[in-house]
Each structure stands twice: as structure tokens, then as C-alpha cells.
Image 1 (cartoon, one colour):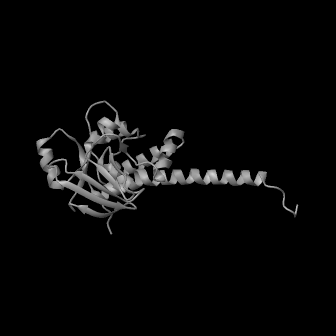
Image 2 (cartoon, one colour):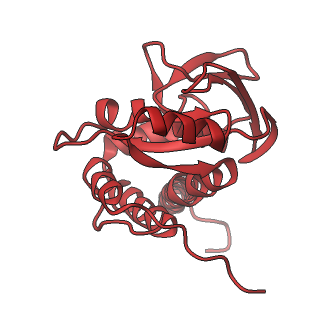
Image 3 (tube, helix red, strand yellow):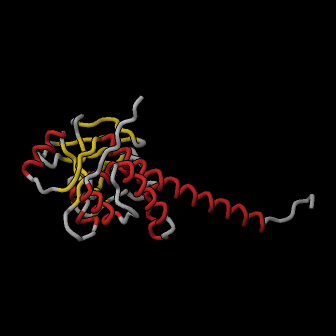
Length: 222
């Protein structure tokens, strides 16, 4: 089977994503973006504050991308919690941590969008043609909350993206299918966070075991 060609990222968008996500290089393809984001997370997991937040997210105590203001993207969890996430991709990423339902709207026409995700897999999507626009602002400002998150949204279909682009020709971004968005979320966010939290937990368990061994009373055989 001939492998699918790499999904190209427009040069200007790649440069902005490097700025906003703090990446080591400019991604030219979606696969490169996944790898660069993955490396970014693994490199920064040693930050105690970040690590504490990611551990809380990993174990379900916090919600990835949760914000304290209303956005287009509401996440509903099985335990009854309902929160807004900063962008469409944040809502998808949270679907790797806990089963959820995303309630959002098409950025072009306000059509309702509902997506159910469990263990990183889409259980149901309404409409089935829903796609994600991965966009950023233009310019030099580099704050994710204002220059990336508001530009990452759901659209009811590629046709809606095309119509919206005709009316907004200066917007910077690219369309991702729902599966491509899941792959990016898995490789760029879920896998490094899972690996990092698991390795730190393993190290903590090893340290606890060694400490118990040092303090344990001698056995009768010694």
C-alpha cells in the first residue's frame, strides 16, 4: 500500500504555531507538528507547576483547557461536570483523559455540533461531516489564549469552511478532519503527558520502595 502523502502546513501558519506553542522548529507537515509538540511537552514536564497540573488532568481532577469564561466549546463529563474549553482542540484532547460529550457550534453558521469521545475515539459526531479549523491570528503577539485558541474551531463541513474563507480571505489556518485532529491530540498531547506522568509515578514508587527497604527492621534470617 502506498503511504498517504504528508499533510502540508502553510508556511505562515507553521511559523505562527512555532511562536505560539514555543516549538523548537517550524512544522512543515501535520506529522512534524505532532512531533514538535510532543517534544515540547516532554522537555517541560520537569516544571513542578506544570507537572502538578498535568497530573491533576491525567487523573481527572482538572479538565484540560478549562477556562472560567464562556466559549463556543462546552465539555460535559459523565460525572456531571460541565466546563468550557479554550478551543476545539482542547475539548478533543480532554477526550483522551475522560469520556465526554462536546457541545459546540459551527463557526460559520452556528449549526449545533455534538461529539462524543471515549478513550480518544469518536463514538458519535453530529453532523458526521464536522471538521476542525486550526488557525491563529496574524502578527507578532504570542499569547495562546488570545492568538490561537479563539481561532481553533469546529465547522459543520469542509463546504462551510470554504464558504467562510471566501468571506474571510485573510484568515490564517488550515482544515483538519476529525480523525486528523484526534491523531494530533494523541501524538502531540496525550502520549507525552501519559508517558511523563507514568514515568514520574514509577520513579516515585521506586523511591518509596527504596525508602521502605532502608527503614524496614532486619528479618529473622539476618
